Length: 123
Image 1 (tube, rainbow, N blue to C red):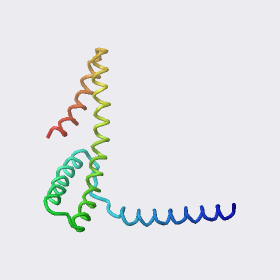
Image 2 (cartoon, rainbow, N blue to C red):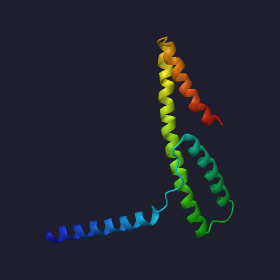
Image 3 (cartoon, one colour):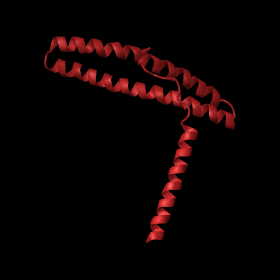
């Protein structure tokens, strides 16, 4: 029984060390920040174009490293876009509910906020 506990402890320690090394190796890029929807949309378009250009040729190890770096910025952009779209859906629901209840000011204000964000995405 002691041998089993010892073996399991060793396995978990090795796995933990391997995981820490893997995280250190692959999580050292931060990518471009996306603190606003506008910034996220610009980064999304720009870095998708960069990814597309890298994919045009034969992929070499340097290309894979570049793709790896690009994905950090794309992930940041998608995270911000997802947050903003979730909030946009909530705002649209306010418009919807307000229209059902004939709440004119609620609809006017919620629709204004909705359109303000929606138009950023349309561009």
